Image (cartoon, rainbow, N blue to C red; front, side):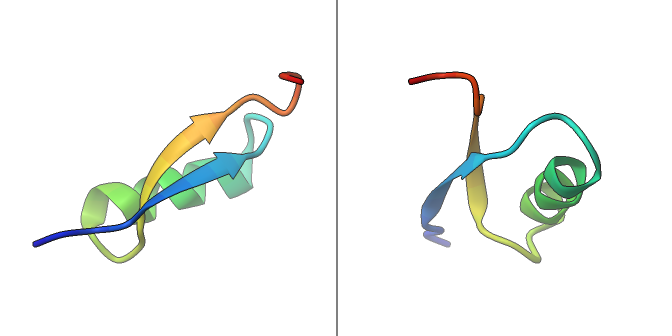
Length: 39
């Protein structure tokens, strides 16, 4: 199954962990977490 990869710009915390959990269990898109501190 092909899944789109979404960049996620979130600091560590509940929203990032929910996005990661959804990516891992297949209920959400695949994610590439990016630090909000990056330019």
